[in-house]
Image 1 (cartoon, rainbow, N blue to C red):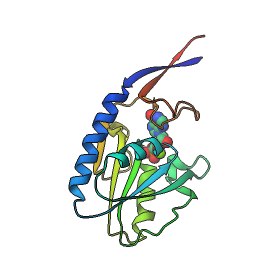
Image 2: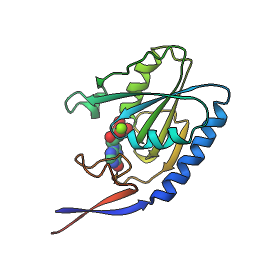
Image 3: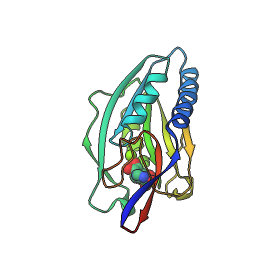
Amino acid sequence: MKEKIKIFLPEQKVNARIAEVAKKISEDYAGEEVHLICVLKGSVFFTCELAKRITVPVTMDFMSCSSYGNDIKSSGVVKIVKDLDEPLEGKNVLVVEDIIDSGRTLSYLLDILEKRNPKSMRLCTLLDKPDRRVKDVAVDYTCFEIPDEFVVGYGLDYAQKYRNLPFIGVVEFVDE
Ligand code: IMP
Ligand code: MG
């Protein structure tokens, strides 16, 4: 089986929606600074495009998580592979995610970050698959709600491939 990528959300549409969300964020944080937390690797493209369009002062930090073995499905326990460089104390933290699926990873991550005493903490995601939710997470900013399909591009991967596609595509499997 070979995979074929079908364009689902073209680049222009994604960027236009990111601009709208960035405008809303800039309004909501007027007079404040916002500290973006990019969850590697999937969120890196989205974080950059969002940051470029936010008009209030922005700082950024990066973290990387992985699940403990294959237990993620049952426990939702994640291991921090690369932690943040800076403390969150007193900051307006905006966690930037590529996609929220079951919500397990994020709900665990948000609990960890909340304990670091940020001034405020919100969540922004490029994509949301609400039908797949197992663990409730409060999403403050969503660019697109999508059906339960496996998507790639704009940072999202299939077996580490396709992150660099400038659009969001659906993976289709075809006979060679
Ligand atoms: P969950 O919300 O804990 O189930 O996990 C979300 C993570 O699963 C995301 O950060 C992605 O790494 C991955 N993921 C879920 N759905 C997709 C998809 O459609 N394409 C690529 N990665 C996905
Ligand atoms: Mg992710």
